[in-house]
Length: 365
Image 1 (cartoon, rainbow, N blue to C red):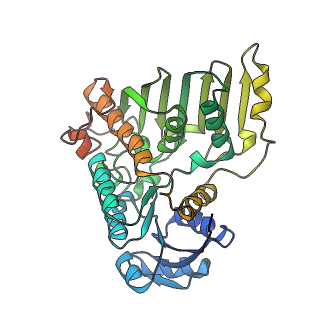
Image 2 (cartoon, rainbow, N blue to C red; image 1 turned 90 degrees about the vertical axis):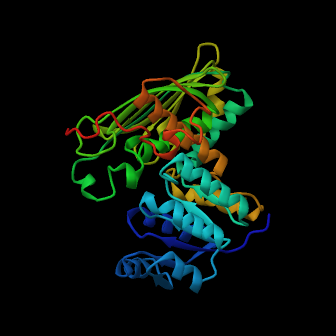
Image 3 (cartoon, one colour; image 1 turned 135 degrees about the vertical axis):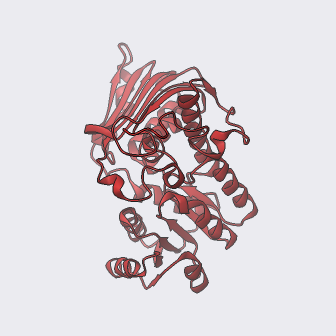
């Protein structure tokens, strides 16, 4: 494998940009942060100074004109992800896009089509796939060491108050694409999907219970997978005791993780089924380790690029998760079960995640 130094830039210098800067600067010389951009040029300059970046700009167009870069990390509000990623692809520059990659399934498909025409790639930042525990679980599951997957639970119970939603783009379908299903729980159920594989059907509910927003503030779903495994998914921003929790029940063991914004090996447990205690030593990772986050994800991106491959999470990977979100909203707002592939390009839920409209539209909380 031939390694080289990848020239990277960051567009959007809000809070999540620090995680991207740490990932680039912590890549052991495999990448260099050469420029940043933000619509607030003063903020871009402050960020550049804090991270010792040579250049700051007021926008992506100027940055691409002035610098030869290989990668652009898009850390802007969600509504800007697709147009900025398209601009990167047209310039032959790989776009690494914070979640959610787009506001709708249709917008995502347009982005994937642009990628097929480009020499570059687009990848969604779903970093919890890349922690040591998740990698070990997928390996054991794929090897058959755990037996068949039977059922799973996936919970994102976070707390976001009214002050959080004072930021203008938050809590609106037009600018955020959805509520905790779209912007918070996506990390956990994307990890669920990466472990259990293709989903087949979803039945869901969503509600706006407490926050003064247009989107939901809680959703719940029952999911059937192609192999018959069942799962429940909860996404909330109303939960004072915050937690992110996943539990996988296999024939030979239960594997669990509970954390908040990133896990270590110490957050995972394996409980063998009676008579299958030989599974326990297969899990042992030694404990401790780095917290799952952007650094492991970015290392995987660089590994793929050095091998001439598309970086993870690929368009195909991310589309499965985006289609799941669209199907969850479609089920919640129509009261029907929704199968994989049922949200077709002409569906209102492909064009907007709220589709035919949230049932609480026009009401106050």
